[in-house]
Structures are given as C-alpha cells and as structure tokens.
Length: 196
Length: 196
Ligand code: HEM
Ligand code: HEM
Image 1 (cartoon, rainbow over the protein chains, first blue to last red):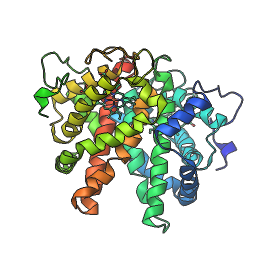
Image 2 (cartoon, chains in turn orange, purple):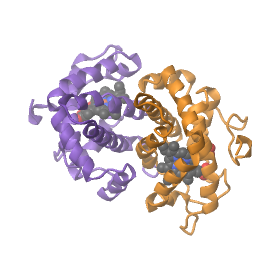
Image 3 (cartoon, each protein chain N blue to C red):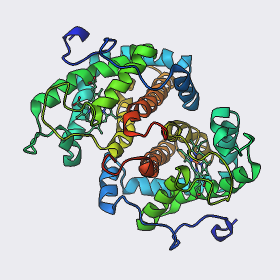
Image 4 (cartoon, each protein chain N blue to C red):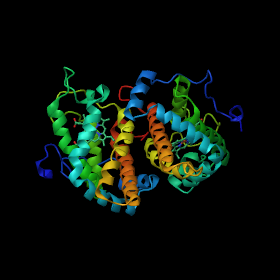
C-alpha cells in the first residue's frame, strides 16, 4: 500500500501542527541517547531488512496486544469489545511507521509528525483520526513500558537477512535509540510544558 | 559503605510514602515488559557480577553527565557551577541503587522507594535530601532518554566476569526491563493521576 492510500496518515501535511520541541532541543536529546550519523546509516539498513517483513512484525505486536486485556482495552468500543475496524485502520499506519522510523530524515516534518502521534495517543486526538468511539486516552505508563517489547521483539527480524552479528547489533541499537527518542517526543502532550 | 551509612538513603523507612501504583497495577506493568521470575534470577546474577564494579560504572555515568552541560546543569548551584558535594552525595545513593536493582525483591517497600526516587527528581523533593540549592526539577525528557545510555553502558560490565554470551544477554535484558519499569514508576509525579 502506498503512503497516499493510508487513511489518516498525514505525514508532512499542512494540517500537522508544529512540534513544541525545537530542533535544538531535539539535538540535545539525540546527544543524550548517543544518536549519531552511524545510527542513521544502520536505520536505513534496517529499513531494507524489514521492508518485506512488516506484516509479520505487526502480526507479532498485534498478537501481544490482543493477548493482554489491559492492552487491547485501548482499542475497545464503548461496549468493551475490541473494535476490529479501529485495529485494522491503526495497523496500516503502524506498518508505515516502521518504515518511517528507518527511512525518514529526522527533520522538522518528522518532529511534527511525532508530536501528532503523541496527540493521537493522548486525550487531544485519540479516536478522531478513525472516527471511532473508544476509551479517551492510552494511559501513560504503558507508552513507556512498550519501549521494552518494541525493542526486544524486532531483533529476530533484523537477523533474518544474513547480516553479520555486528551489523544486526548496530541496527538494533539504532532502533532502540530511535524508539526512546520517539516515545520521549510522543509523551510531550501528557506533560506540563514547564516539566517537560 | 554499608547502607546505613549512606546519607539520605531511606529505603524501607517509615518516612517513605506509599507508592500510588498498586502491586496489581505493577503486575500489569511487569507483564507489559515481559518481566518474569527468570529475570529476577538473572538480576541476582548481575548483582554478583556488578558488586565490585560499582565505582567503575559510576565513573562512566558521571563522566557522561559531566561532559554534557545540558545534563550537569541539574547538579549546578544557583551560580550555575556544578555542586561537587551534591554530586558526591547522590553518587553514594546511585551506587546503592545499582545493587538494589539487582538484589531487592520488587515488593511494596521497593515500589515505595521507586516513588520516592521519582519525587527526588521532580519538584516535590529535588534538592531536599542533600539540603542543596540547585535547579528545581530534572526535566522529564531526559529521564526517558536516559533509558538508552543506562541500558547500553552496563553491558560491558556484565561481560567482565567470564559468563557465557547467553548469560550476559539474559542479565542485560533483565536490567533493561527493570530500568524501563523503574523509569515508568519514577515519572509518576510528573503526570496527572488520571493520565498516568
Ligand atoms: C513504544 C510504544 C508504541 C508504539 C511504537 C506505538 C506506535 C503507534 C503508531 C505508529 C500508531 C499510528 C500513528 C498514526 O496515526 O500515524 C499508533 C496508534 C495507536 N496506538 Fe500506539 N504505539 C505505542 C504504544 C501504544 C500502547 C501502549 C498502546 C495501548 C495498547 C497503543 C495503542 C494505540 C492506539 C489505540 C492507537 C490509535 C490512536 C488513535 O485513535 O489515533 N500504543 N501507535
Ligand atoms: C534512567 C535514568 C536515571 C537513573 C537510573 C537515575 C538514578 C538516580 C538515583 C538512583 C538517584 C538517587 C536516588 C536516591 O536518593 O536514593 C538519583 C538522583 C538524582 N539524579 Fe538521577 N537517574 C536518572 C536520570 C537522571 C537524569 C536524566 C538526571 C539529569 C542529569 C539525573 C540527575 C539526578 C539528580 C540531580 C539527583 C539528585 C536528586 C535529589 O536532589 O535528591 N538523573 N538518580
């Protein structure tokens, strides 16, 4: 599926608000997670490795969410049942996110869309993109906790295309750093600006 | 240095308030980061491995903080200079924390002290324990970002006592999970209760 065909995927669009995190502050965050040009290089390589495995990665993550009532909760309708249309709509954007994480330059457009993703997990915009009636917010604590499974479970997929252990490790560390950066950016709407 | 001799270290003391996170909610967090009894076992092993390396670990972490003005900032006095007494006082508790992370049961006392550590990074209690005059809060974004360096830099120390690659990896994953859990707990005071 090409990007344009993904409903609700508004990367780079005018409608996406400017991130409250400046490029200068983002630069300090990159320094804090030791993110360098080498990581960008290995993210590109990870993008090649993951390109034809996106569906399998999503099967695994959706299986994880689906098998835990306290997680699938955030995809339920007002009757408390999982909303399969909602799950399916988010899945397409989630797949595109894997590729964006690997292939996009981390510039102002990227920063803005990270903020948009944050708003879509928070009260501000959850449910709006897909026009669904579901719980109003993804509780903060699980956003941070997900850093672990989303980092750990990607590694076997990075190993599948015959790269050396050293290359796999470098792709994996770059992924881990990027995820920490993104969750840091996404949680901005949850915080008082002066505490962030 | 024995625990009793660490100024400001109040683990298990009456004065430590009860964590707002219940053991039931903590259990769901553990499930979310795939934390099991096997991780407890490997944390104990990590505790043996790290016991006589605590000072070297702290040298590395303090070197990292010290070499970045945007990080050492949080240890500065009102004149903007690093407060060496403050740095030294925190260092002792930080060393004990490494051992606690590995050796303590993650029970109610542990949960309570995690909340206390959170309060000490937040406006509520920063600077009070050591009676210093410093900046009033550690900004949220660096707490999340630190998950990367505090995870990545521990690995070489876990490798130093001749354990197999598989054992080192298991110790490292257990450390990573624990750190994600702890940072999730520590940031509680930064969040509105209904968003957490
Ligand atoms: C590291 C953590 C996480 C990652 C990488 C992640 C990734 C994503 C992505 C890429 C999207 C689509 C963004 C877009 O609209 O373009 C999304 C949306 C969503 N995620 Fe997450 N997510 C994380 C944590 C969570 C957690 C813990 C839950 C709870 C189970 C969750 C539930 C949802 C829901 C319900 C949506 C749809 C929000 C809406 O209504 O627009 N996510 N996530
Ligand atoms: C994963 C992230 C972090 C870990 C594991 C960590 C660990 C610790 C520990 C164990 C303590 C002592 C707790 C006690 O009093 O018993 C502490 C206090 C402190 N940390 Fe952190 N920390 C983290 C993030 C940060 C960051 C990003 C900064 C900013 C440079 C920072 C600055 C401080 C300061 C200034 C104190 C003293 C607070 C007070 O006044 O009581 N920490 N930290």
